[in-house]
Image 1: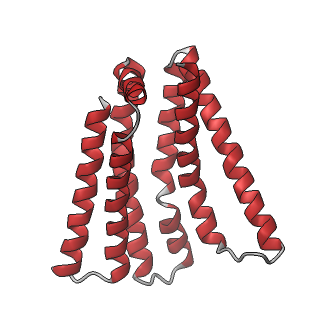
Image 2 (image 1 turned 135 degrees about the horizontal axis):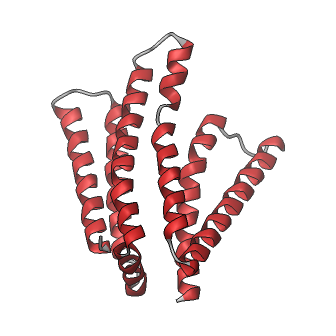
Amino acid sequence: MTMHRFILIFVAIGIGALLLAALGHFALHWDSTLVGTWTGIGLSYLVLGGAMRLMPRWWREHCDDEYARPAGRRYVRAIWPILISYALILFFSGWMIRRGIESVPLRALLAILPVLPLLALIRVALRYFREIDELQRRIEAEAIGVSALLVSMLYFGGGLLESAKVISLDAGAVMIWVFPLLMLFYGIAKFLAVRRYR
């Protein structure tokens, strides 16, 4: 799958999410939190699609080459259903919890339900990691390592500032942001690693 196709998919998902937010607001009379969630999802996908379009040509060519190989094609085929199911489960989980479920075990189950697709994502990523060539494996390992270290230092620094009463952080919000930050820093670190090894 080419980067051009990735960009089109991201833009299509973004527009679809924004249309769903508009439908929920004007026709289905959703509450503002739900409309805001889908608006945020839509804008995020549009921003990601735009960011991918602005990437240098050498990066897009690297990605085209990486995902044209058998391991890359299998990875892409496996990852899309996982990402779509993650978004749907996250939406369903939040919607059910906001409805006011009193049972603590059921609330806990619903709250951690979105973790299941992420476990499947880890499995697919590990299979991809085992199937790629040595140089690509080195790039991936470096990107994952740098990402983990940066997020750990950020989390640690935030904890120190919180302990010193310099800032006040909501623990739940901070924990939710760990995985997205890992993915963000992974992407940046991989970009820099590919640039160095190309």
